[in-house]
Image 1 (tube, one colour):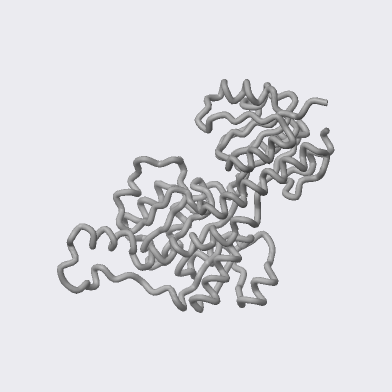
Image 2: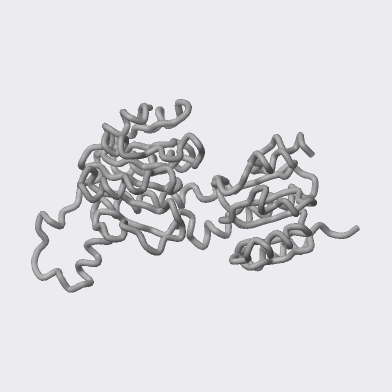
Amino acid sequence: MSKKHVMVFNRLPEELVERLRQHFTVEVIPFSANIDLFAASAAKAQGLIGASRKLGEQELEMATTLEAIASVSVGYDSYDVDYLTERGILLTNTPDVLTDTTADLGFTLLMSAARRVPELDAFVKAGLWRKGVGEEHFGTDIHGRTLGIVGAGRIGAAIAKRGHFGFDMPIIYTANSAKPELEEQMDAQRRELDDLLCEADFVCLVVPLSAATEGLIGARELGLMKSSAILINLARGPVIDEPALIEALRSGQIRGAGLDVYTREPLDASPLFELPNVVTLPHIGSATHETRFAMAERAVDNLIAALTGERPSDLVNPAALDHR
């Protein structure tokens, strides 16, 4: 019996590629492969593994034997889940393994924006520190300030934990349902979004991208925030109306922002880069050696399970099983 064919469409550690080869015939294509090369390779595959590539009907029309896609990511907004489900194609992701790493980065952004770390680092390196710093270089305190979490899932809860236990921050949150554990452990209080924006000193966005969350934070919402508030985005770029945010930062409507995601990625030019009150990182929420390996390993586990007749641990679209 011939082995099933797996296509790797994003960088994967060689030892994990070798592990796949123990079970399947494996083809590795360049991450930069154009749609024609991708489609031709996918046409032979029963399984795909990778991340950061839009996959829907156009890209997968020729992939008539495809059974499963293992995404090396938590988010799955790059995939047309309804289309995959209708075709009986299983989609898996990699939750849990990046929770703490991403929460660490969220607090890094929060602290960097509050204490103006990139701006003052550049100030020192430019040789401009010739006397004691004055009020024009002061930041804002973190401890004791109110932390608002928009989307209190795993990552949101981990950020709240850091704020509450590390910095004595009162926690308020929005979520589709109440989070009793968060409320019990951290005395967190649930709020409607508008109320949270009015009350919080730091607002952290950690919602998935969906039709309901696209453009969630626009000019109206930014106008509700305190002029002293700082906005952190770990979610997806389109959750914020970027031009509205730029205007709010330019005008001083809010104090600052810390961003790891953008409407367009990669981002090689933007008015954001001209603003001293925003920290800009290149979508590195999970970008540590340890976490990226753990994510890839989890994706490999999911793909092996899916292609050998087992139910994967991290199945995004269980309804696909009914369409097989």
